[in-house]
Amino acid sequence: MRPALLCLFFLVGLASAQAHVTSTGLATLDARGERLAYRLTLNTAEVGEGATDLQRVAAGDAAAAQRLASGLPQWLHMAVDGQACRIARTRVQTAQAGEERLVLQVEFACASAPGTLAITDSLWQPLGEHYRSIVSITAPDGTHSEHVFSKDRPQAELRLGAAAPSGTWDFFRTGLAHIATGLDHLLFLAALLVGSRSVKQLLLTVTAFTLAHSVALALAVMGWVNLSPKVVEPLIAASIVWVAAENLWLARVLPWRRAVLAFGFGLVHGLAFSEVLTELHLSGWALGRALLGFNLGVEAGQAAVVLLLAPVLAWLARQAQARRWERAASAAIGAAGLVWLVQRLA
Image 1 (cartoon, rainbow, N blue to C red):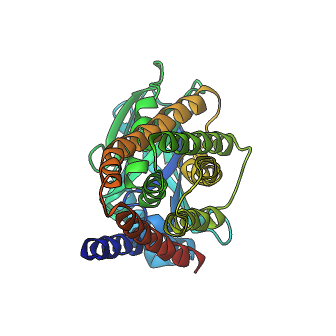
Image 2 (tube, one colour):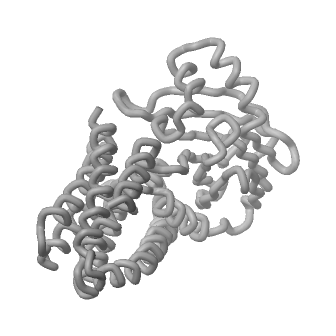
């Protein structure tokens, strides 16, 4: 059982550290005049210590406000037709009472309405090297484009008089990164796969999970379903514990039962996926592009995990100690889920 114990300690350690390695800020930029309105929403639980000064600013700390005022022009810069815009006003506030979210609002005063807009977003400097911003930009003609800024891609130049880029590829990469760095989502998928004892059951389970989280993602982003992260995040942890427990204690899981379970919990996971898009307040074709790109990215990442794990699980299923390995893996996954559940209910 030594491999099983190593697996257990590794997964619990990762769970204790963090469910998502990458932190994401969701922003809107209204560029329909000489004043550019920038609004960034941050999940302080994701960003961690990087948001400490912003929290202090929101609480009225004058020293923290001064540090923000001196640092912000270096981290967030706008220029119109080659002329730098100045920061006219800055405000930090909590999004809603009881939520671990902060909203940074910045108003830029420019010499003219944007023709060519150059953006430099180096917010990864105060918020951590794994931080990235997803920005939805409203051009003077009312069209939208979406861009992702990170340590590797801190700049973008937009010709706002021209046709706006679709941004679909950016959202595809964001969806791919979200599933690749979302350890809780990956462990839930792994628990489903470990408990699948045939190719038919595996395909049925994965299809049910995919359909459910795709539907929930679309409904949440369109504003038809709204559930607080304080409810969704513990439910995700509980879904991992539940499926792992079934793998441990049920000698045989009926295919239809596992598919129903995957669909039900898939709805919850889809609501978690939607947080990346809902704060952008997209509509129309811009919303369609974002949904398409992000969901395809999530599905591509999920398919890659299935393709990697399925042959390994098929090989293990033929071994004499197959049930022992299945139980060990399920115990490790369940322990990680339990750690998250306790953390998220605390």
